[in-house]
Image (tube, rainbow, N blue to C red):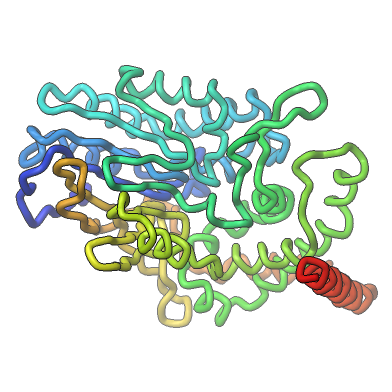
Length: 419
């Protein structure tokens, strides 16, 4: 089987260096639940930049967040939300073991005898464990010379180009950059975002059943043919909110528990609908208008490619490299969504050419794509039936009352702030 290769239509322009920016690869722990089981494809893509016409071009290879899907990688068959150094290292070791060809590609890329090569790993919400120094050291040990492997944190600058994953502008997944680690029960744990806490404690238990459906896009098409999935998610979130969440909140002073039911419900909507409602481009375009020191912003996070301009300034939102599929013919067929990433050439620290590169998705491993997305429905309906006991109406009423209370609290807070 031949591996698809990127098609470069133009020769490199006169430039000082090239930025190759890949977002949302989401390499997991292997198997059918891994959203990117294509180490060979990615390794070849990386090494293609050591060949003509790039051999004599200085290149920075930038993995712009969610490179590793540590959020969905279990530890000892669980998804703990209290993530210590040992938990983080254990999850990262599983991902590394499943993707040796990726790290081999990075090592060979950095060993290029021609123009300079560097690799950057920006932190995203699926690999927030990169804040642990031990995790960074482990990754660097697999990649090559330490001076060529860098971890800039949640964002970086390359000349007049600003690069960030984008989750730090999303209230649901923002991590406190000044306090990324907190102490709990005598050890340091990741000060994980509240959105990630809720996902780990609810949706991850459904992931072994619905991992394929997580990859389907756009979600409104999915719910047209599988409306029960949304209902199942709401039930799981409500049970979490009314039972498990509060046990941790009141029982042990858990520093990661900092959320309301309204936000939990919004998280469910985000996760299942892919309706981000965060408008990253709006905030960044305001910065482009106000600042002349940045000519190009590059972000990821939403998996939706796009470009916006303001005079000679530009915002580019990358798509993703993870596997995603579009259901067609009322869900009877799954069509692979092309993968894309971004190239930016710099001269005198300013971007002189920035463009998307789209590549055909490689063939999935045998058994990776199910014959039908409807195969899970008997189990989904069985789970829903178990949830729909005689107390269903009471639960629905409790949800409505909770939402009214929080709405009243927000109105009161707004009045107090305005007075």
